[in-house]
Image (cartoon, rainbow, N blue to C red; front, top):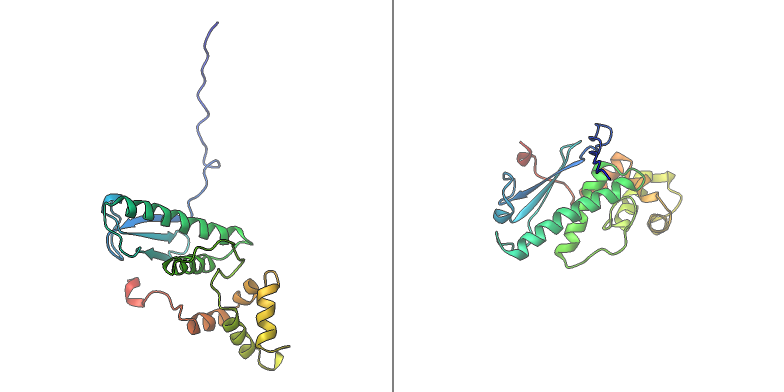
Length: 187
């Protein structure tokens, strides 16, 4: 009996999936990538748009097991949340980043989101969005804020449709205080 071992074929360019995000460990906000033992935060950067999300767990201390596990989990949570939105009706990069921001804001309040919601993330203030929508529709509105809030809560894909309008989304984000990073931090 002879032993014939063959090597697996080398992966081709078609076999590789393109990375959609860059993950870094940080010692300070806006800083350079550091080793896990020196890190107290993470950075998630969308490769297509360059949009950045940074997170620093409260009380993180470099080199502790608790911090290293928290950072590993934070990287995983950011990736999973972006993937959930991206794979749910091809969510936009902006929707992915908003969803990541919302999940981590909830985590800071001690809230773990159990059930995924579609489109605009898990913390979209539907009443505020309905208010913006009614104001922007003006006389064309077919109902009041309560009517549109109910539609946003019950109608599959309606949040995503409403937030796909740049003017509505911009006004909603402004009123919700979701302005993004200060311009001078983007240099």
